Amino acid sequence: MADLDLIIKSKIKSAVPDLSVAGDVPEALNNKVIKILEEAAMRAKLNGRRTLQARDL
Image (cartoon, rainbow, N blue to C red; front, side, top):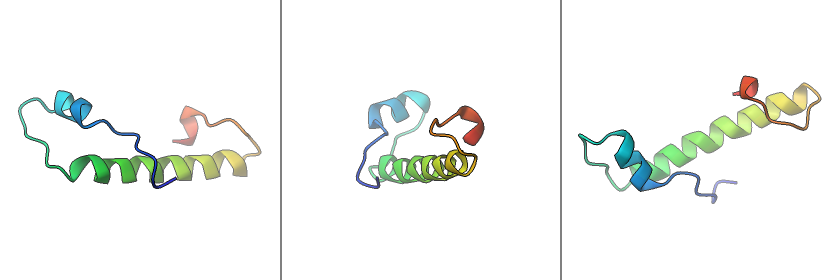
């Protein structure tokens, strides 16, 4: 799942309009999001569910 791009750089710029966004920020943020999703997926599976829910985050 690590090769999946979930983050769009232009959206990051929109979220922090007063700052420039370094080129490595989208990749770092993408990695954090993937880790959060992997942990949430594990929680859902451990609870016997096949549906990821907000409470898993």
